[in-house]
Image (tube, rainbow, N blue to C red):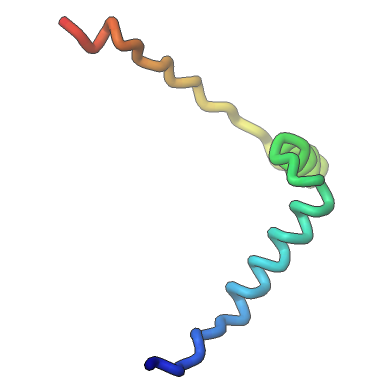
Length: 64
């Protein structure tokens, strides 16, 4: 039987803790978190650039 302990990386642990804290702060609402992050970036003076959306391909266009 293998009794080795899993490797612990403090940076990965910090990332996981931060993710958990943000999930709790925004009640696991990814949209709310994204909007808050975008607002924060705008406050810091960053410009937001949106990429054009890719149109989904329907089944009809795949059959020729």
